[in-house]
Image (cartoon, rainbow, N blue to C red; front, side, top):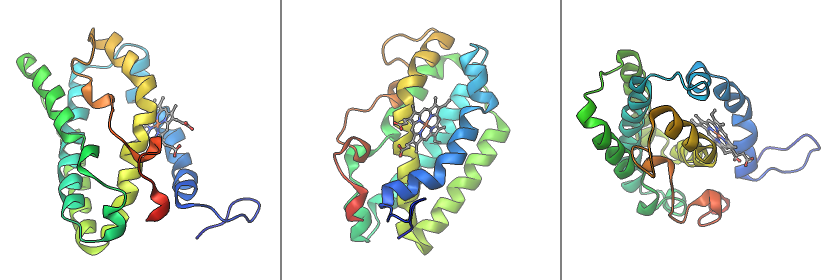
Length: 179
Ligand code: HEM
């Protein structure tokens, strides 16, 4: 277990938060989010993002479901799947025949491959990915209205993956403390 600035012992959640803090700050200023805030994000970028995430969630969720490690099972349950909502959003945009972004698809494939490898070699480390993807739902509250404004979306149309109504660990449903 790691210690904080004052030598106090950090919980796993605190450790995850502290170690991803710099990456989160960088992400918030990424050109993608700047363009989104300025209402200048191309639809291809959002749909490319959804496609990339659906590939990652597909691999991750399958690996989590078949993971024999009890510590993983104590955090993960099927209600936390996001793939069905991502696919629902992609179906919403299907009639618009949005072109693929090769770079995004290539990068997502690489990450999916490394997730597959980790699921075999270090299955417990998959919980780090669960933390990042689940944690990103906290920011979704901020991002939803920006996507809705940029692409003139109403209700959950094309945005359902940014809503979550299940019992999730970030909102206290399940916890990393037992893992
Ligand atoms: C401009 C884009 C983003 C904004 C405005 C944003 C905003 C936020 C906000 C408001 C929180 C809650 C902070 C708190 O309650 O202390 C949060 C937490 C979090 N976000 Fe983001 N976020 C963005 C992008 C992302 C992305 C792309 C990811 C992942 C790939 C991500 C991962 C996380 C994680 C893991 C947490 C949980 C931190 C914790 O443990 O409290 N965020 N974000």
